[in-house]
Every structure is written in C-alpha cells, then in structure tokens.
Image 1 (cartoon, one colour):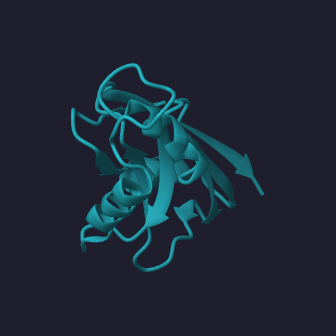
Image 2 (tube, helix red, strand yellow):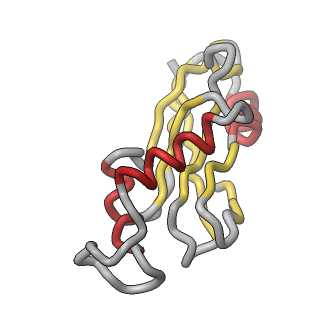
Length: 131
C-alpha cells in the first residue's frame, strides 16, 4: 500500500517511482495492477512535467465544473463532480512489466488524479501477477 498526501488542491500526483520499486521487488515478467480504493480518485498514464498534468486538470474542469449542478452535494462546492470523475479517469490501471521493469513508453508516467479537495490522504494498492 502506498500512502499519498494530495493536499487541499486538485492534483495529478506522480506515483511512477513507487510503481517501479514495487515491480522491481516482484521481479520477472508480469502485470502490475494499480488501484485507488476511493470513489473520487483515478489513475492515469500520461506525460508529466511538461504541462500535460495541468492540461488534464483544465480538461476535467471544463467537463466537470466545480459548481452547484451536482445532485451529490455534500462537502465543498462541486464535490459531486469528484464522484463522476472516476468514470472518465478510472480508479485503476494495469501495466506490463518485463524483467522487473515497467514497460512504459518514453514519456509515460503513472499518476494519481484527485479532484477531491476534501480528502487530502489517499491510498494506492499495488499488486503483481507473474506472467
């Protein structure tokens, strides 16, 4: 289990290093499954650090505005959108592992996506299936 402090702002948090360490400790070939057991968080595979993370947050803001339209209306303004987000950014990803290393593309990274500013602490569950 990986603990992630996402803070009180919407975030795209890089968890690639934690995934790489877990895959290396499992060794060999197989599949790494990444899962966040939260109704308001997701896992994305994308380039980070070049503005793509901010672009993702902006796109989610356009698709899921933080306003009062949401039926699910407890917590901060627009909280209901956080419960819809995992339908767009799912709470899981499965990644190939070859020789104990993630088989990601050159610019790909693994990120926890969290729009929920009401819950600053997240867990990420990692599991490995040997191939």
